[in-house]
Length: 108
Image 1 (cartoon, helix red, strand yellow):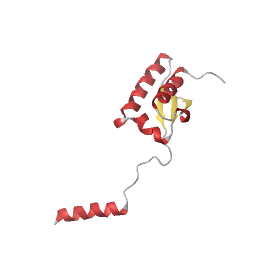
Image 2 (cartoon, rainbow, N blue to C red):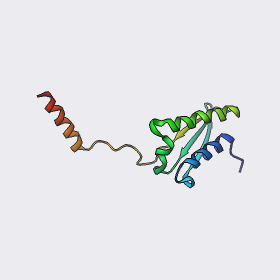
Image 3 (cartoon, rainbow, N blue to C red):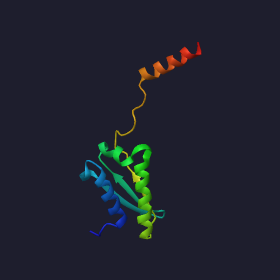
Image 4 (tube, helix red, strand yellow):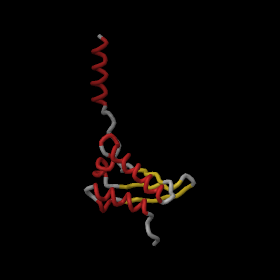
């Protein structure tokens, strides 16, 4: 098996260092005409640590990754894969009806 590129090792090292489940971290590489795309998979419980407050941690990782990639003459982007069931819950009917009732009360 060929050695992983430096930018892929970089992402694995940084993310594994900051999460609670480093054994569940995977970085998959795909190459197309746009450059290299690294897809990051982590345990669902570690998503908050990887994304950070207002996405700042993810943005920082991407910025550093671009620098490492440029140093190796590669255009590299990072996609953080959302785990299944990781979406925010939608509003329940009870919550919607209470919000609607609140709006109705304001109109009176």
